[in-house]
Length: 255
Ligand SMILES: [Zn+2]
Image (cartoon, rainbow, N blue to C red):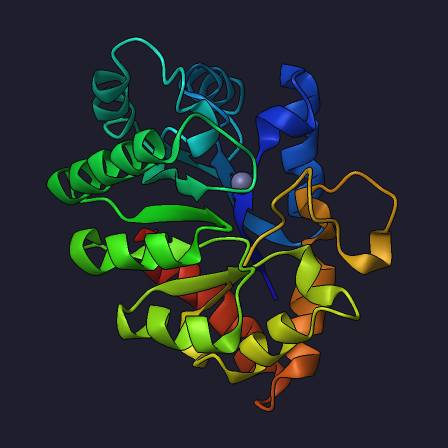
């Protein structure tokens, strides 16, 4: 069964254009038929976009992450408007709030997040959302500002109770390699209870390597370990779960 990696920082795994192409090819050989490349900043977006223009399995997301709040780049709004017009750009993100690392002040992060949610609604794109230690604020803002095309809570790190609130907003939830960690009980409970049509998986590479590859630097080709873990957790037949992990992101990103 084909796999869909909804979140990979290809520019962070390797800066070299040839290595990036090799990564995408290696992923395809491991069954990863689709990858959403997530930029680290807008300059990185345009560079990786060009490097991977021949990689058939790579799609792109564009946005200013909370880590860039102090310096989003000159004309960043115009750059996003240009970026979303390019072929195979399918989402705005990652955007959101990160109160764990002190990126600028919270008000500035909130302002940047809301501005991009409004842009996504206007441009008619879905969003990929980053949340670290900011769960309440993220949810409160999304209740008001979630764009029509919807959103993904990526690298899910909250509990099942929080997920139920997110599901009321029709959000998708994406699990990274940390769902495979033995002591991640909140994530196991959530991944088991989630409606099947709302679950996604991602590598979040180069971070969050699945436990089977502990000690290595993560890459999209390791995604199968996360898919296998979710299949084990769920009560449905294996084929049904694998099909959902492919169909859900295809539907969400409109591919
Ligand atoms: Zn990320």
